Image (cartoon, rainbow, N blue to C red):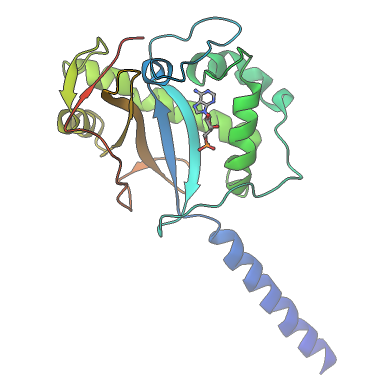
Length: 225
Ligand code: AMP
């Protein structure tokens, strides 16, 4: 009888654990940022110590999210960012995930923030090295700037309709992005960040399961960098 009870307790504990692990999040947002729009605001920006980033979208992060619109954050303070774990990714990190915060720095603060706040919440799926390598792979695979340029949308300070930007990406890559805008120092609405959704294993892009309402004017600037 005692062993029976013990077994039931163990099974309940096991199913609770499985439930909580499989429900840690539902999908990821891959968020990319146009550096020109981070730097031409009233807050300005600072280039990484090594060099000015290339004129390309940079990674902001890979963010686990729930379908109800909220998201987990800072899930494990016992698993701090460790740059040594991703030393073989450093060149790619500097090139595709550049820091723009001030004062000028090597990027580890930004990457550490992204790992601590978001990465620790998808640890059951992607360990630290996988979190960064997967994000880099997704970013280079989707090549947003290539998709926009092929559609005649260039970062030269011209204005484009948000619809034309969204459609260009959807038609070239097959997935509908969400566009986030900010304002330049003169108050013009401009293309700031692009959100795409990725399945909860981090292996493929998906159509976003939720609507992300982001404020943009109908027509927005795509500044140079
Ligand atoms: P998150 O907490 O992941 O939503 O990211 C927001 C934080 O990232 C803010 O503190 C921003 O200032 C910072 N941030 C956003 N873009 C960059 C960037 N390119 N370089 C450094 N920090 C950034």
